Every structure is written in structure tokens, then in C-alpha cells.
Image 1: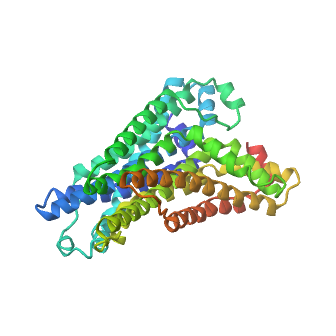
Image 2: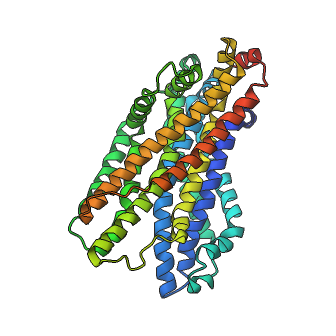
Image 3: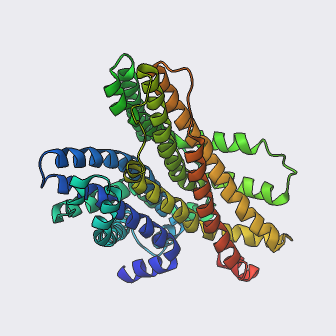
Length: 446
């Protein structure tokens, strides 16, 4: 059995490498949040209050992005290997053991990735925080540490989300008859099941409560609470992804004429067919756009309200240090996840590209397909991210009695553009490498 598991990991090394990279990023980002909390407990007074406030903001944004990213990655990791698990059953492995082995593989990769992320983060903790907090003299004298219990909490948190995200896929893979799994295509229909609906209801209830509490509240309360509105909307969109992603992707891509180019037509249909895999790439980027645009839009609304109330903004601004502390970790995690997702699913695209070449397409057409695929992912994420930003801005603006919403187009554009570059690299580079392979050999390997 151990030899089987080892051979399977080597055979699917691309999938496990992507999952490992995401867990490394999660452990790296989680170390910073845990260090703020752990270090704050060793001090008193203003230092503790400052670190507690910073840790709560970082923990909230990091938790939302981590839950969405890790659950998507773990579910995708299992889904991409259904055929391998079916072959296991054909050689005599019991379905119950298949599920246990899958969960053990996830746990092993997650623990190794989380520990690696912590080890990578420890040497840069103090230099990074010194750079972020350089304007606060009291904080520059603080030595940031991470105790063993705090490190264990980081690893446990990453592992818990990964295992819960992959549990349903592992059980489903072990219950499907081998002949059915081998006969089916890689197409997986996205559904909103009862657990997802329950989670969406809980998120919506929290959003409604937070939004309702803003109306008639004092400015200080709105200042502290409004920051959670857009992240909750982004979380709700991610949870309802099986409903929203197909509709969004079909809606905006339908605006492009079908005769625009053959490569566009092929890329659009490919992304739509593998929507479950597309969702794992779109959701992290959507969250990154929503968190960044929401923070800047909310800050602009609060500044505008302060000007109308007092006649001046009293030096109100959103410090770059606050942006880096609050969004640095979630943006890093989302970027790694989006790129890793595309890399993990590149094998399926290699087969599609080989079929396209066999049908008479040129290498230029195949590369253009990869470029258009990155465009589809990035644009879909940008559309949904802007919906979250606009929705959050509308709620906060109404609570403040403002008539206009100064959407932060610059921040959303920068994040969307950066995400597009990462997705472009993750799609085009493997595509160019796959073109070196023999078409017949690629199709025969499938």
C-alpha cells in the first residue's frame, strides 16, 4: 500500500505540488497573524492594544481568504484524482480504505506545507514587521516571536480546513463505482448542496446583522464595523459559486461574438466545460479583488462622510502600512492559489490541446487558447469582485447617508491586472512546454 501511495503521488506530482504550494503560503501567512497575537500577550498597555487591533484585522481577512482558498484547493486535489482512486479499487483496495488513504495524503501534504510555511516565515517576521510598523516608535522596539503552541495552532487550522474541504470529495470518490469513474469525463457538475446552503444562510445572516447595525449608529461604530461588510459579501459569492460563476461567465463571454476568433471560441467552451476547475482559479482572485477594493472604497466613504460632518477630514487617510498588514497575507495566499490551480489542472488542458492539434489547429491557435483562458478567469473574477465591492459600498454609503459611492477602480484594477499576469504565466508556460510533446503520445497516455 505504501508503494502504491508513493507511486500515485509521483504520478500526480503536479497536483500535489500545487496543493503543497498553497499550504506553504497558508502557513506563511498564518504565522504573521499568530505572531501578532502571541507577541501581544507578552506586552501591556498601548502596545498590546495596538497589536490586538492589528491581529484581529489581519486574522479576519486572512481567515476569510484561507477558508475559501484551502477548501477549494483540497476539493480540487481530490476531484482531479478520481480516476486514480477508481484504479485502486480495481486492483482490490476497499472503498473505505480509499477514503482513508486520500485523507491521509491530504493530511501529510498539509502538515508538511504548513510547517514549511512557518519555517520560511520565522526569519522574516521581525524585518517585515519592522518595515510595516516603522512609523510607530513603540512598536519598533517589540521583538516578534512565535511560540510552539501558536505554531501548532497555525498548522492545525490549515489542516482542519484542508481536510474538511476534501472530505466530501474523498467520500464521493470512494463510493463511485470504478467503471463509472473511469468511463466519465473530467467534467464535474457544480451543485449547491445542503451544507453549502446552510453555510450561505449563516453568512447571509451575519451580513444582514452587520449591515442593519450600521444604520443609526455612531460614526465610531460604523468605522469599526463597516470593514467587514465587503468581505462577508465576497464570502457569500464564493459559497454560492456553483450558482453565480456559471451565470457570470456565460453572461459576459456571450457579449463577445462567436466569430471573433477560433481560439476564443475554443477557450470559452473549454472554460465553461471545466467550470468546477475554473471556479477554483476564479474564487481566490475574486476574494483578493473584493478585499482590496472593499477596503479602499470603505475608507473613501468614511473620509467623505467625515468631511461632510466636520468640514475637513482631519488628516484622514489609509496608511500604506495598514493596507500591507491587512491585505498582504490574503493577497499572497490568493495569488498563489489562483496560479497553483491553473498549474494543477494543466494536464487536462494538455489533452485538449493535443486534440485541437490533431484536428488541424496550429501552435499559435493553442497558445492563443491559453491566453484567452487566462482572460476569462481574470475577467470573471473582476466582475464578481466588483459586485462585492459595489454591494459593500452601497450598504456603507446608505448607512452614512451619502449619495455617491467612490469605487476604488485603481486598487481593483491593479489586483485584477496582477492576477491576470499570474494566470497568464500559469496557463501559457505549461502550454508552450506541452507543445513539445508528441500529439499521439499525449493522447495515448490518456
